Length: 459
Ligand code: ARG
Picture 1 (spheres, helix red, strand yellow):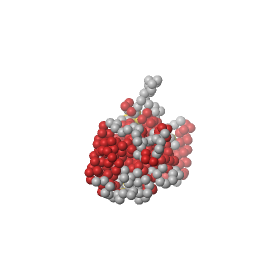
Picture 2 (cartoon, rainbow, N blue to C red; picture 1 turned 180 degrees about the vertical axis):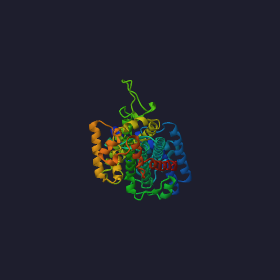
Picture 3 (tube, protein in one colour; picture 1 turned 135 degrees about the vertical axis):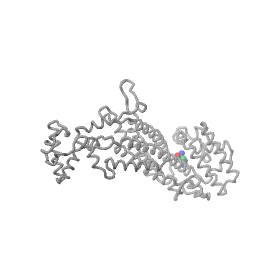
Picture 4 (cartoon, rainbow, N blue to C red; picture 1 turned 90 degrees about the vertical axis):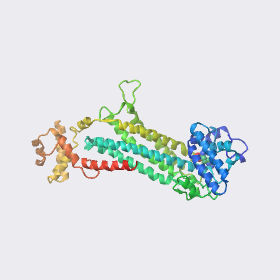
């Protein structure tokens, strides 16, 4: 395969250097975006008087035919230097030397930046809808589990009772912020670098605004040197992806814990678990474990790109070719992870029973007992002390809070005599938290309504 830049070179490229330099083995994935950009660019060249109407039509038809055939099978030369060379040489094969006019006033530097922006834009839209699906699943589960109560944890120790709906919706809001981060990142992605050429700007009098409109870009870049060397939009995309995966990994860790026999809060469906090749009894939560593990590679890609950019002089440098594999792997990871995670959640069975049992004798309503004394006029610090003594007494004597008689309770403070403990105490504890954002049943209903509105609005 002939390179696009052979003219000033004597010897052909050394095999080892070529192997290092070529990017077609991974950037072939940009072929659709490359063709999309070129079709619009050909029209802009015609408008600028570089191509005649018939040359533009020939080039466009050639590109359309390549696109059609490439959808059906491998048609590009695998020896190509990169995807841009692959498309251009195939175009030349098909329509002859007129293909050579397409690259007028353009460089692969502004071309590749345009291609990756188109690719990320498309990926964001897909990731956005996958996140939304997961949010919908969470909202459905939250609606279903409105009555289910479980211990809320701090320090992985029972803290206070919460509604399962509240716990699940916590992840809904993380995902909402993730979605917003992708939307925000899109503003910086959706800027067109085409027309920047190699670094100094194109000599062709392109109507960049019109070209941008044609390609669906919201604006055009303001500085050609920045435009060809900028990968901030990609850093932001990898960063939003990393945080999304970090959120999923936190959720995954809880699912793994909850699915363990020690917790037994959740039973994952057979269809999303795996067995062991040696231990016949095993049913492993691999989807959740992979969700926990995936941030490793994606955060790695983010760090990798930041390090490629660090200290890089203006404008384009070949270092920038290192941006792609991590990007593609990130997109692949999200596209595989999100639907699997969704399936795992929507098919899981939650055990109301185990969650209720976990609250038994766990002292998770003692904050409420202190609040009870506060309502009777005791300063909170004092109430905390009294209830602390009560807890110590129970632990020392091996008693549950709910087994204490009114007299025993009153021995710690007369106002405690009728304080609710056990299931009634749990219900009181929840009801006491009906302020916005709290786990009280009314507050969670309002929260759910907000969440449902979001899932409906964005469809
Ligand atoms: N494969 C290259 C990359 O990904 C395309 C741009 C090449 N530009 C150049 N001046 N050699 O960055």
